[in-house]
Image (cartoon, rainbow, N blue to C red; front, side):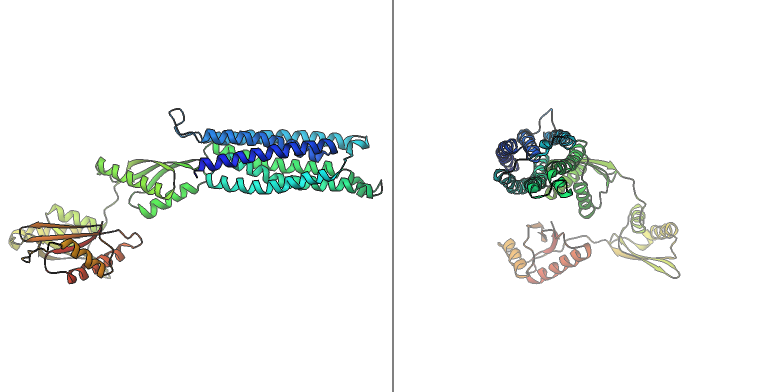
Length: 464
């Protein structure tokens, strides 16, 4: 069942019960002359109008977005919540005026209430009905984030207490005949019905304040902060390389509209930036259903080079590759160790000046006490294998991974060039691992997989 269907069913149910209770309360209120019951009847009549308005608002809000309403029609529920607030305020004003007239009247008949079993019955039935439908509406409103149904649920929750106040009032009116005229208890019980109606007013005003402020805040796009905080945490944990510099989030019912500005390297190609934006939108959509995200890429400030990055930049200017880079902060000063990659047939005599220039520049820019270099041949060739490739090679790799208890490969690709062979085994990314743990995990699988398979190809296990 869709959210719109749930809201419609709840709204129709609310209308039916409001109509029944309104008719019952008006009949009993007129018969008994109870201001408390009449105020409840008027309250229920306005609740009926509000329920009809909520049904109308729910139907309008279910309409899809269009050119005139690009963010949908959900705000109509907040408008209806304001209308309900105004109706409740009107009820409160009428009850206060009627109560003041009765309390200030010199006519004892103005305070008389004709109690009967029907007065008690209608109030008790009203309480039972309101308990059930308030719980139902509150549940559906929470599931669908419906402002209109939430307003209805608040109304009927307040009706429970106001009906209880009325029940107390007519009980007092029924007991007034057992008290001595002129006593404080007689005076209090004689006015119990009117005082109960004022208790209803206090509850109505409290509900009006809560509903009105919430409707105004929603109409002014005030976010509750939950969705925004969730998005910020997602970006920090899942995409720390692209910090959020600005974010605006608006919530309309179940829909969340997020506009995010993230800082990215200035050198990014537009296609790459587009791929990153798509990944951010998919990440948020997976965490927040019905979210629509607009991502804006902002060129970030280029951070200062770390010592490691600076050394690699210097090496590239001298046409070196580097690996095995280690920085040691000793008591005597900074010591830098690195392996320089040179062509295998290069002579030390030919590269001596370049090596010394590299050491000198690194030492000067990092204020290092010593720069220790180790020269290695730059060999980047895939080894050759003379053993024929089995026809079911992919199946052999997959079965070997199963026997090792490793994750099932998402892809197995074999690349050949003459007798040089490379097999790349991709496995699902394990997001729960940090970098060190993932490195150890893949290295362990690599080592055990090579031991399981014949000497046919160089095997590299990697995350997809």
